[in-house]
View 1 (cartoon, rainbow, N blue to C red):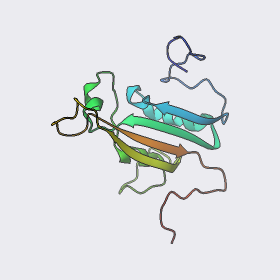
View 2: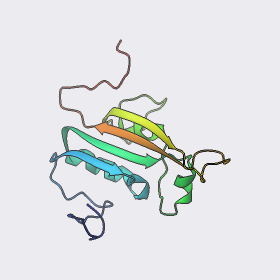
View 3: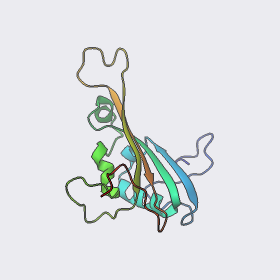
View 4: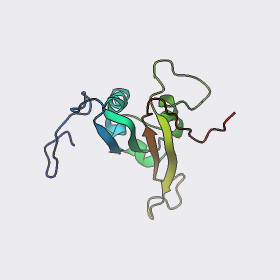
Length: 151
């Protein structure tokens, strides 16, 4: 899926609009370096939740806000840190964002620093660091524990 009818694109759609899929019809969504280019990424996450089947996964890769590549790209509209994704899960980050429901279970979150010779030599911070996240849509009646200690 792409916004433009380029070679190899089988579905043209604008991610700023509702996704062209039926409710609970998709098992897996791979959003690699997409969210940072979207004006209304909250709306897109809500749409991903709508089209994912219960138990489906939204895999996200975004540049870390503090890496130089995130700030250098003039097409980036959003910036993310690890805690950005806890607003959509049951994870506790010290406060609750009332407007956002606990849509997903956090399946996986990792920060990966990519050192690039010539770009990182002698400069503070990595040029490119990305956040990798799996957000799982819960199945009714089933709770996925995300590493939290049980009482």
